[in-house]
Structures are given as C-alpha cells and as structure tokens.
Length: 148
Image (tube, rainbow, N blue to C red; front, side, top):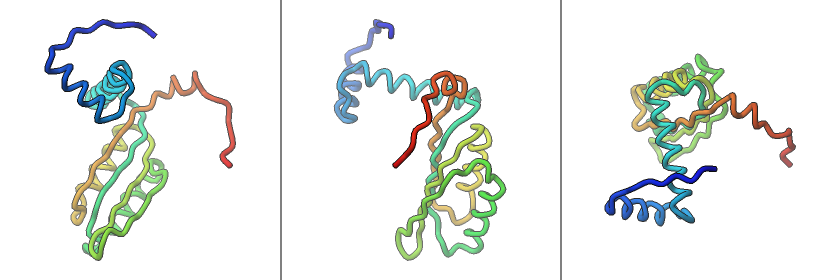
C-alpha cells in the first residue's frame, strides 16, 4: 500500500467527514479508497472500458399490464446467458418488484437492463453494475470451498 498526500478545501473535508459518519467508516483513508474505487468503476463503465460485470437489476411493474409478464420473460429468455437468479416480491394488489442478478459483458447487461426498464408497464427501474476484472480474479483465485 502507498501513502498519498492530497490537499482538500475545508468545505470538501467537512462534506467528506459527514459522509464518513453517515456510512460508518472508521477513518478517512477507508472512505477515500471506497469513494475512489466507485468513481473509477463509474468512469470505466461510462467510457465503455469495463468489459465484464455483475449487476443487480431492480424494477417495479404493474403485474396487470397487458402481456407485460410474458414480455419480461421473453426478454430474459433471449438473454438467458446473463441472468443468474431473480427474486419476485408482491408489493400490493397492483405492483410487483423483481430483483435480478446478472453477469456478463457490460454492454450486454446494460442493453438487457435498458430493455426491461423501457417495457410498457414497468414503473421504475435501476441497474447497479460492478465491473469485474477476470485477470485479477484468476491471479488471486482462492481454493474452492464448500457452503454448508
């Protein structure tokens, strides 16, 4: 690990300290590392340089919307190689929420998420993508273990 010295204006330090307290960080270094990683991941995603990712697609939809359930299922079947698992939750008489774990090329995951969110009857949707680096995961691969 390397020590880096940075200069921040007083207002930015005050905001940083508020964020540290809100998020429960133990110190500024931990917070700055996490915020830097998040910013770098977002910049790589925005630049299209993140080749692989894992993602959570969350959306709320009107379960009574005409043919929406079958359109959603067809979208996922057309991209079956990206979808890992889906959690379905009944929110009330009209609304359902689904959370789908996705894994694959960033551009394909974004494409699928955009299509799901844009479906008529989907009221809200958001995708959170986390870039994965296949080179570093292979280099630091841990031995296999069992889940009991």
